[in-house]
Amino acid sequence: PPSKAPTGDYVMVVRAVDPHGQSSRAFYMSDKIRVLNNRPTKPGISLNPPRPKGGDSIKITVVEPSTDVETDEANITYNYRYYLNGTLYEEHLNISQREHTLPAGIIKKHQAWKIEVRAYDGENESEPAVISFSVENSPPHVVMVGRQITIEEDSGIHGIPMNEIFMDWDGDRLLYSYKVDGEGINVDIRGDTLYIEPEKDFYGEVLLNLSSSDGENITSLLLKVVVTPVDDPPRWEPLRDITVMQDEWVTVVIRSWDVDGEHVVVTSNIMSQIEGLEEGVNYVSYTNGSFRIRPDNSMVGSFVITVSFSDSKTTLQDSFVLTVLNRDDPPTPPQIQCSLSEKYVFVGRQFTLYGSSSDPDELWGQNLRFTWYSSLEGLLGEGRTLNVTLHKVGHHTINLTVSDGNHTVQSSIDVWVVREPTKEPVSSRVPLLAATGALSVVLGSILAFLMFKRSKGEAGEEGEKPAAPEKKEEDTEISRGKIDQPPS
Image (cartoon, rainbow, N blue to C red; front, side, top):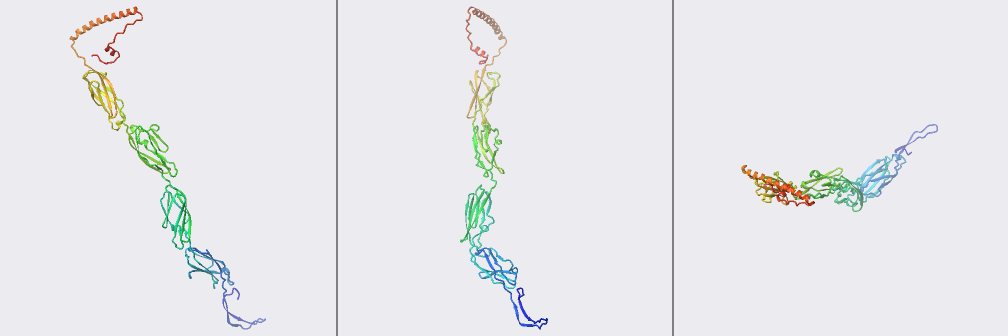
């Protein structure tokens, strides 16, 4: 039969024909002729990987296609059969593709597999092409997507399950180890979890080498741990409370920084808290926020100073207490005023003394004590204002002493006390007036005589000057214009 003849049973019919076209009757042979199908040839196959390990995917490829004299090569299909430990696991029939894959994760360590591939022409299969193998141990397998772990700066501890990084197709228990290449992160593996914690204020990249073992094989993975920076707030040394004595300089040192390298702006509210500060006089500021201050008496007390620290995004505040201690200042020298228009007064007549003095410490509760003394009568009294009546005739030195308890200052004035003139009747004064007139005539004559003698002497003795008359004590004091003893 021809190559394209259908297969099956045929009946042979024989008929004789002469050259004239005459034929005999048909003769049917008693035996049938059976035309059989030609089987396709056995294909050639290959296995990839050639030594499968647990969890591998298996790929069977027809490397030598089957042929058939009756069937075109394009019409030949293939049947793939997989046997696990002698039992059919699965089959895939009439596959036109010349390859077939068993997905990953099916085969396990130490299993025995046989794979048969037969060509099929639609009626018959070819002899099988067979590959048998025993599954070898599969090393730990990396399942992590990518090779990088990204965490934020100062974000604490991050736990990562190890089964998100490694797995074992054979189901073996895995052991892990690590090595950090660089600084900036703390790493630990406890159980089946990887823990990563960035060190404080660190950001950057660190390489982490992880290894996993199933007891037979080791798989390593080089991970890049990326710590991304965040905006760290400004930082500073703790501020300490400060105590300073008034009128003394003190320097307040402020140290601040930013771990991101940003400039930190430091300001304080000291100028608004303490009145009277003036830059360059009793206050000096520095660019880093430090300052010097020399408080005076008006600044005694305690002040809460708030300091602000700012970078490009964050402002934080801290505070400290600045205490200015009071220094005991002496009172100013006292000034004395008197109600008398002249500095003499009659015996027994009252007049008023006014004392004034100041002390910066009066702001802080210190009291001044004013005490008055007379050089003739002793203690007169106390107070800024004192009404006085003197009884002793003579020159009184009035002394004012001002004390704040620790310091004493003094000042004084002079006052003369005289007797008040006696009032007499007019009749008794007439003889006195007559006598006074006569005395005036006599004194005038004597004075004229003396002037005559003086002029004569000057003419007789040229260059010779008469001696100056002796000064009387009462005349001397009056001539100086001072009233040491007022006239009675």
